Length: 268
Image (cartoon, rainbow, N blue to C red):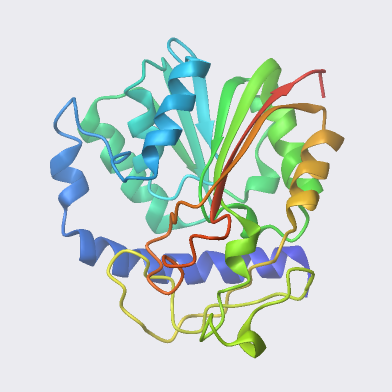
């Protein structure tokens, strides 16, 4: 299966999932973003993220998130003083909601429905800061392709911050994470899917449209970043569970999340 087919399948699966997400949230984001102090960065694990954002200082900066889902995190990041934001995502329903939330918030944010790998050259060397959040990297078969786009969009000296689920956490995505035979190989490059759905908000299980995610070792992630002209500035691992996955929350002897900060060191 080629990358375009994978992307289109994932687009359909996420459009399906967003309907479940919106039902579970019951307009809480629309109500929230009418308040100029509202943020979705209020989970326990977000404390470490907020500390890093304050150290980077994105005030008066042009920022992005790719993929951005329904824009809630990117709009929340704008509360730290960013002057402009652009979010990109493959899901039609997610981007439509993001545009609605941006209008409600009154923030200077735009959102585009697009395959991340096909973002226009008009954004080359455009962003001061790009945020990559949990559950993002697993949807890209080739991380070199993905970080090539990230680097292309960053200004020289621009920074990325990745706050992601640790690859080790993905080995426990099987039906029973305590059953050694059900643990996913850290080295398996085969595409995986979520047959019971992608509703991490309401936790509803349903028959998902076909979708494909990929295991990426930590070394794969770091190598793809370095290969594309982004210097590693900081890397920290945490035992913080990010995705509201009750089956692995007790596995806190393992790294479950990480933060990586990088800076673009050359024009791409």
